[in-house]
Length: 201
Image: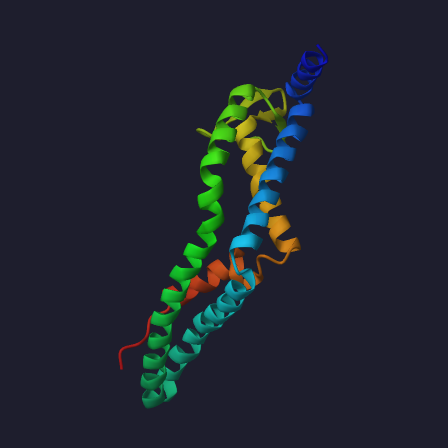
């Protein structure tokens, strides 16, 4: 009897905001903590961060090699060959690091999908959190209800927002992700290096 009373009270609490909003936030936090714990256990993050710093420095060196083409052709050719040999080695290293990072995902993917699907059925397309933005309907993620000047988002949208934010925050706090190991800085450095082309001399 007490169990049924507690169950009904709990379902009533999470049925609508703000209870639903905090419930999904707690799920996202729990998921992020599990993911980070598995990462610390299965992945040598210090080694990956060290390699990422070397890769970032290598990518930045490409500009220095390209600059040599204008002044010192012979040195440019030597540095270019040296950079390309290093680049091939770093590409292999990046592939290995990608496989390392996938270890936690391989363990959590199926259980999380099942749990996510079950919880998703509880909320269906009901409003879960109030959005500060007035956006158009987004397929699958779905900003779903607009009343007056307010916009409500559903479980999927709020979970994704919480998950992305909490994962990044916890990884930064526990130093599992450095500036060189990802984020916008690392991405732009890689894109810039790929965009550069060695002059034909």
